[in-house]
Length: 100
Image (tube, rainbow, N blue to C red; front, side):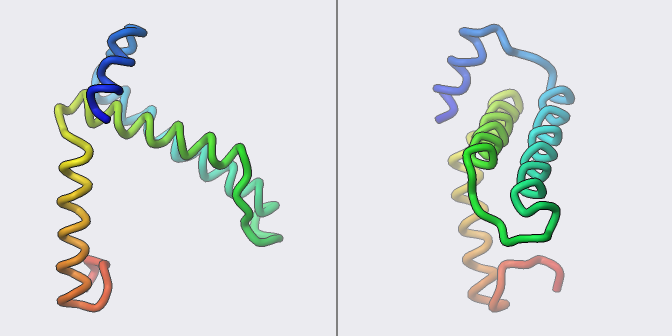
């Protein structure tokens, strides 16, 4: 996945600094939150996935993968590590939270 993202940002000359990448990711997460709120009419009805939410999830993933690329982090490797960490927590604690 990372080579595809790296090729895309190079092809379109989208390289930038890490701080800008982080702010972009935070902004995309905010946009996802806004679409979720809108889809529930600000908590008045149950959530239902819609094309806008799906689009914003895609934007969040893209921003996260680009941030990983800029940081020199392999997203697949760190996701695998996180899943192993959560499996261990679940086995030891009965849930994946770290707040105990």
